[in-house]
Image (cartoon, rainbow, N blue to C red; front, side, top):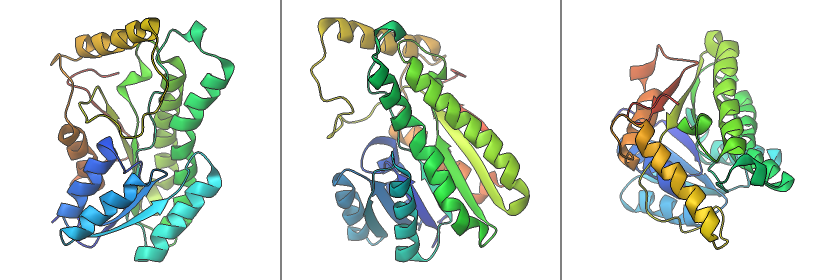
Length: 257
């Protein structure tokens, strides 16, 4: 019960890593604000409440500042404070060599995987600074060094920079800022695909190159599990990591990104 009565605001919590973090934090006593623009988030919050926890779903489009601000305000309205913010929104939309990206696709990748973290960090600060305590855990990616994902890599490189720079500003004000950089992770098929379009034969080849490179770059030569990713995020959120701030921990089976 490391998180008994701690309030977690978890973005991108409807599916994948975010959902597993929400489930496991709730099992350890946390009160969970499930933040996602997908209505599947309501099912996650209901499942947490159904087994004796406390979960609330907050619908928000975190690619806008207004969405981030309303999400943080919603968590405060529900639970009175935010002890831990987990910024988990993001993910590759397209996978292809950089010269094949359209200008609008470059913008979309950065908007998806950088701005939700940037906006949410800013929106939560008034609430954490008011009480001089809190933890922000950003979810970056090993893919800052990878094939066929240059715009996504740029966005996640920005997340690493946010983590280091914001931690510097807040270390003496009671707030820790840390991050994980997940490698390839086995997860159930997404109920809401990031890119719902049908892949061409060429796009399938480019995506397979990502898979092959990810496995090859990992010293363990495999994908991780949702629990292997969630466990490190929860460690960083806990008091066990009280002397860690400003760092991004790679969780990629030995791939340092």
